[in-house]
Length: 399
Figure 1: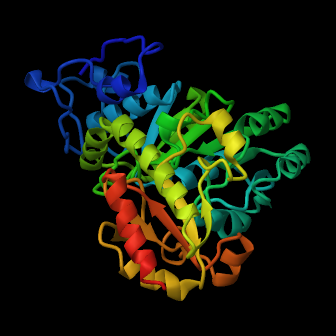
Figure 2: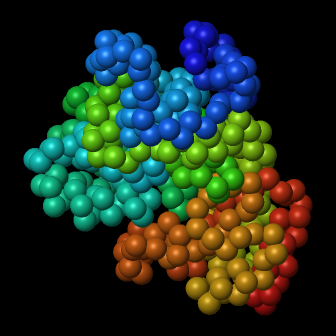
């Protein structure tokens, strides 16, 4: 399908979610993107085949490289993030690992924060050092310390905001500026915020990535990753991925496309519910602390207010009494899945020791400021009043 060249500059995110990448009719007049399961694509003559192979003409050759269904998903996400280009991956972690291994070589230095997602943290602590990459992890909310480490030398600055699972916020614009002063490439994990709530590229980032498995897809039925940003960098990521083989399959791309069409609707509802839940939990005697940047009491609130248009659908809270209380509380819930992942239409809850930081030891979680009594809650699209009543009953079970 040949896409119409639309000018998306003044089009709002909800309209982009539905129409971006899909403004022309598909095969036989279909209005919805077809799932193209073909592994290989044939040509009637060698000259055309060769022109496609060298990029002189649009087309597809082999689905490990490109696929029509996947291409539509990439284009939609490119437009939602206001990026020059985008490329996709089989999972969010495939996107993160491929990005880091594409951009970093032995002897180079990456600066990041201590509060990154558990899988990302493992890349920094276990895998990259094996390839002689110098890794410096800084206190997440100490902007001065991060800037100081950047000035010592930095090939890649890798940020996540809000962080998983304690919802810490970093000043993206300030750190992007510091990184560019030394010629560093800035990568931002925008999974928690989504392009509805935050635009890292507009704040100075070079690449923005998502675990599309989460809010982008929104239904916990498809896995994928997406990276958007400068074309020069995306071309390098694409080349690494096509050889590395961490390719997004057509069926997952179709499911993610279907999910992203309701992204703005879902995220706005989840923003409202998460804020209501955070305010509710902050008043409960059984709750030790609530982590959510939408609260005026949160240390990251002012920065979040500056760089976000909504505070997201994920919050965290710690219970008095530690992990035993966590088990009692979770077992008492009715309208929540006790499961890993986040960003789904149904509420998902769990402690970091079995979700975001299952790979980390108790001591490592403690060093990261993650209490054993912490519960991460990704609110769904249920009615907030019902969720609060359910949580209130579960809290009562702790007394």
